[in-house]
View (cartoon, rainbow over the protein chains, first blue to last red):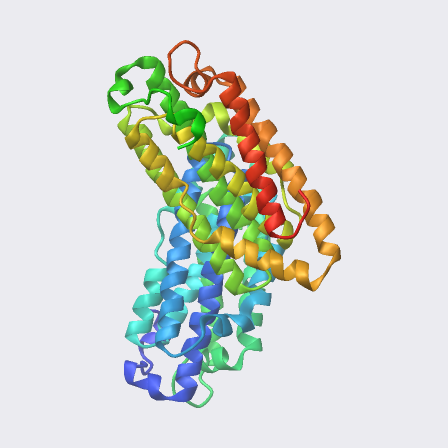
Length: 236
Length: 236
């Protein structure tokens, strides 16, 4: 739980009977579902860059876990009476754009996208999970569970940087591109979708972040990214 | 069971104690494992062409099933005392080449690769499964189980052909490319690998196909492909 959200009123399961809150949860699960679905496809695609069958298997496992997360989120949407595909529809363009704009061109860039890109997304959704009822929060946290991919990617990246000093500059640049694209897409997604924005930001409901809290959240995401880059010995 | 193999002596579980037979089985499971692993990655990649989130999910399910087939085959290799990655190593180039040479450039070509390409591969492995002991055969047949993808692809292709007559010619051409590449890669894989060749073709062991049987098998694969193309109203 973050400082900004811990002292604010919390949503409960009963709030799901309120249309605006319910629409907000459906939107949040919708964007997260599509993120997991395309995350699955993208990781599988990026595993094509893997130099060995062993690495392909490692990323393959990560990818199939993303797919099972997608399936759980979609099942929850159906439980809430929403069609998962309709719930995902408002977000497909922004998520597709993120992957297009942050498409790695080799194995190390693919690893960095797993290490930094997926981590930024996970941090974001974890923060946002503080704003919803406990059942939804638990589901979201489960869907974000790391299956060891961040550590795997970090290990491979460290080895590559140690073996070739010129790699560091290129990866630092790529990391900056990833954080920039991620933050701008996240802001765009929220800004364009009233249901999601209503959930995340307090528009008079008494729940959600105020503008200061919203900005602080992005500061925390950036700080966490900086720390991750420094942990690899890269300037952020 | 095919005509050519039904009247020949059958391998049994006990034969796994014979080094040559065991090496043959390891080679067969190795090429099949790598095929499923890369098949998983490739289907996930081709799902990127899917026009809707619904189609992405359909192909996503197919892909994750291929991965679980891979995992079962790899587990069997380990049971036989073989390292799955070593067992796959002799075949990675040929399988990668097949996917590179048969890379679809749009959604309909991707569907045709599922419909025709995967079917050719399945027919091939199903024939070959007749040449091994029952436990290995059962495992291979399970790994080849169709999870509805062929029917799904056929339905989509039929709709596309009905909606736009110019599609038929292009897909017929692409189908010919797929069968040509598939047969040449299959022959190359077998020819280049002594362990696999020793399993498939009778080199004095008293088991496997004779040269005539081998050629007949490829004739059957081609005939089945022709029938599949005609079922879509395409010339083969």
